[in-house]
Amino acid sequence: MATAKACVLVEPNRLETWDVPIFDPEPGGALVRVIAGGVCGSDVHITSGEAGVMPFPIILGHEGVGRVEKLGAGVSTDYAGEPVRVGDLVYWAPIALCHRCHSCTVLEETPCENSQFFEHAEKPNWGSYADFAWLPNGLAFFRVPDHADVNAVLALGCALPTVLRGFDRCGPVRVGETVVVQGAGPVGLAAVLVAAQMGASQIVAIDVHASRLEAARALGATATVSLKDSAEERRRQVYDICGPHGPNMVVEAAGVLQAFPEGVNLTGIHGRYVILGLWGAIGEQPVSPRDMTTKNLTVAGASFPKPKHYHGALHLAVRCQDKVPLGALVTHRFGIADAARALDATAAGQVIKAVIDPEIS
Ligand SMILES: [Zn+2]
Ligand SMILES: [Zn+2]
Image (cartoon, rainbow, N blue to C red; front, side):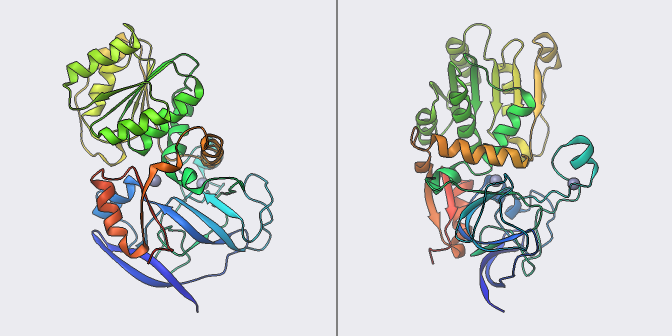
């Protein structure tokens, strides 16, 4: 059987490059040659073991763009009804839905109770740190428009679908609203981009890295605040910019626990606070419940974007690719064998977005 390269997490903190079999697609599925797989902050937590026990050994990577190599029996369109052929580029949502569980059918919510995030590395596999991804039946993929800049599509990875999911849960940004974004990694940058496209009047990004704040400005942030200032000083700056009633919406995209009480404190009266980044931050933080009642706050967590959010993210990225320097957010590319370096650089905040490019050896 033909084989190809894949980056395999054998156990926590042990990455190896394996030759794995290339499988034909199943009916309803597709086999794609990976053009690039996005390196996500979640991959760092999965590799370190903080994200819990995985069915090791697994192929890492849940963000990708690939070229259709073979289509499974019965497949002539993508999951939005667009015709798709061998050779087309596709972008996929990383979790196959079963459409026959309580979450899928009664709640119409993700995650699906029967979804499988990873598969054993030697079995048909949709991990994207690999030469090929085998997309099972039920895993939504969408044709990438011909004029798309692949880097623009990959730049915000699963962050952009996550932000669209969060705004679905917490109410969209309305024209003229003021928005504060805690953290300017991919999730925060995606929030800035969406808020700007929705017509927010002020978008304030908070981060410690000057390069990230600069990227936030390029995507539409109207002001930036440095984490190097004290919490009190940060609040003063936010209220100076957003006005005495405070921001209408605060988006947590920092991924550190201390961001949570600060976010509750920053959110303005009748405001919304959406928590997106604390997925890997295990622990507790004291907050003032009185703040939430007296300010009439709406607080919502959001995770596990639905296929529609991936579809929306793809098309939003393509629409914005010439208006803002989205593609330039992909600052680093690594080969499959160098995935450990890519993860280290992502963990250290040295990159805005890294991708695994199978063409690099
Ligand atoms: Zn289901
Ligand atoms: Zn991701």
